[in-house]
Amino acid sequence: MTRLPLAMLILAGAAIAQPAAAQDTGPVGPANEKINQVIVYGNDKCPEANGDEILVCAVLPEGDRYRVPQIFRGGDPLDPRNEAWVNRVVSLQRVGRFGTDSCSPVGLGGFTGCTQQLLAGAKAERQAADKTDWQAMIADERAKRLAGIDAAADTVEAAVVAEEKALADRQKQAEETAPATDAPATDNPDAEPLPVPPPR
Image (tube, rainbow, N blue to C red; front, side, top):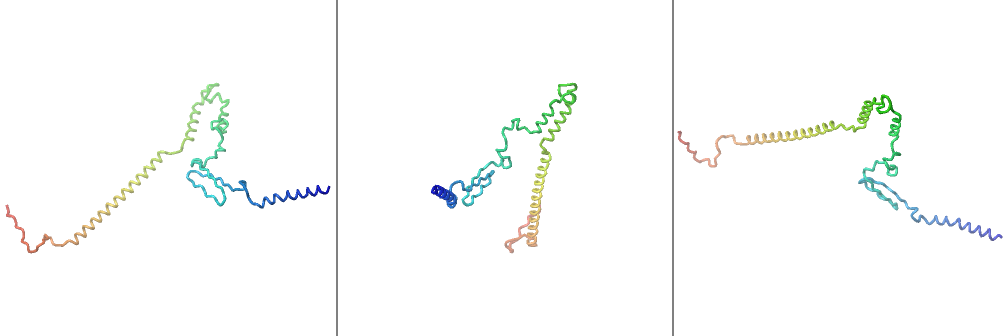
């Protein structure tokens, strides 16, 4: 009888020692590898892996950089379940609206209120419209072009004035260095003067 508990005690001690021995051998297998998953957008470069790290880069288009990730975007945008609550409330507000100032064919005075509805719709369209002021943008671009033309004209005019001044300086220097005599220059000082033609 004493042999059985003694054998159980020895087996239990061996079982406890085996996990400790397995831990001493170091990391083995893919469970202990370091994996880094990186998402890059457009032309961004994938970072380099450090040491034994496994680096995986997913390249997505540049247009997705600031978008909500695909898994959180939901399903079909035309699905009524994905409709905004603001639109749902507006549709609920219109339930039972008839009579005076309702612009509906139901009830007494239902024809009234159409003008207010038209004006409210026009105001909502104006507020929702793009706030781009095309005329101001065109005027700014035109002013930039005119400024460029004026700057180019000023540059050309300055170059012409400088060239004229340089030409005048060269002419003045040429006049100063030229001989002061008005007599025609001749190669031979002993040459006879040309005959004078007789008067007519």
